[in-house]
Image (cartoon, rainbow, N blue to C red; front, side, top):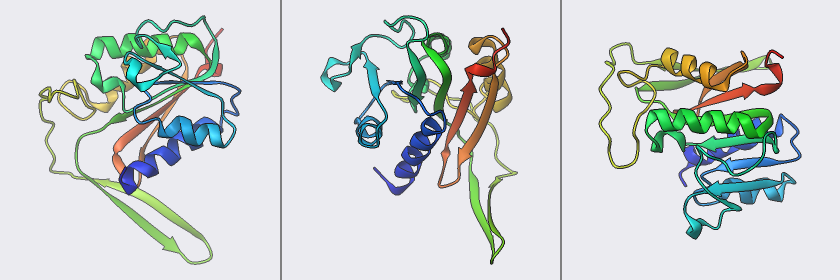
Length: 198
């Protein structure tokens, strides 16, 4: 758990808290840090994973979540979907949208160098922004035993990922996205299911 990873956990909690949820489903709990901290501050988190050794609340696949429609306020998956082939990850996203009432929150790895910058104006405000490497080329992604795909690689540019998220979320949802200033490798997507067209 590097300082950058802790920054991402802070953003995970912050985005979930903004929805004021009564219940949250986390796909792929990993070390369990998110659930431990979330439960400590009063967020009811249940977990789903294929690996029973992680002691999830539900044992099952993300692309066939074994719970009814709209059974949680929020469904989330942090740095998880890239561990599946892309088509499977989009099925998992669709399932997350099925079981969530309010929103789906995910984070994904984004390749490509960028540099975090901060401008502090005394007594006014602090402005944080990222500068992308203008000379970076989009590389082809090669499966490394962990990630099947990453944003910013050939075939997986951000525009394409946004289109796929919009398509699989169904119902013209509002989707917002940002990269974590303290950890630009992590990009968040917040899918507002309550904004879906009836």
